[in-house]
Length: 310
Image (cartoon, rainbow, N blue to C red; front, side, top):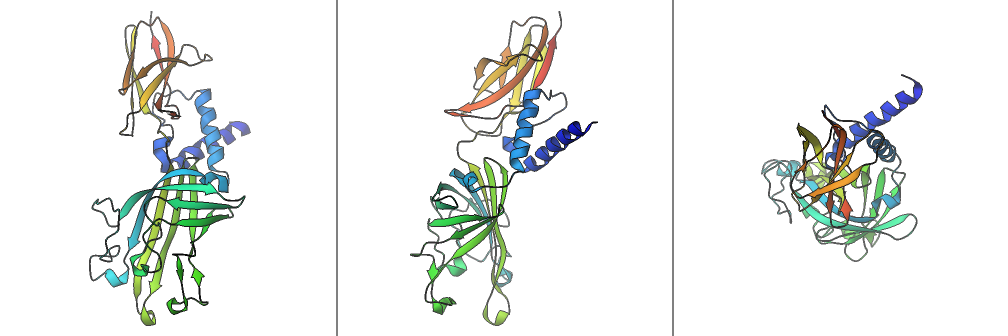
């Protein structure tokens, strides 16, 4: 294997390793797939983008935020456990698990070349009941800047994220700030993590609460790619089927080409997860499927090749 091929193989491998965290939005590779030039080119472009440094513009847009937190610590071990401080976490999805979670919508806009503002629709992402007077569980606007490419530093507003000398502030008025680790999996998926944090109670004899706060951001409107494309041949008919992770009203565009260097043509639209392509002559055919919804379109699925005998 020459040097260029080794580099290409390394990039593709790295892409699929990094993309395992964002499996709904990347192509799947299964036995029998055709790794064609267009699929490989898309994968290499995505790999290079994923491994590039995060920039402030990467945060801009409207995001679906899935927040997971741990509220508790040694003070709650005698009660219901490490991540349960006996409080109601507004918006909790109610699933039985060891930590609460909830969903929100974030809108992030650019204020300057180095600063963005982060506005949530329903909740304050740094809510902590132990500091209820300090961090209210209401949507607020945070001013954020990117330190390097891995740390997002955010400053709360003066009106409701402040505390005074009697709350441990060195001056008469302090604004709350938070630093979060950034991991960008693709243009459409970012993870922010704060913690774990331990806050001591009187005389450092224990912890009032232990907090981790993970927010997974998925860009609104992004449609996952159809996955695990399969084909079945019956005389002059090919049945194409696939899997799709979203429970939505997405439709599917089916593309086909009839030569290795040919151009894919849109041959039909399906509302179910299969399509029957009939009246075909003998020869080779390549298939690929895209999901569509209103003005949005997914990445392409994996590619399958079939041969119809004479």
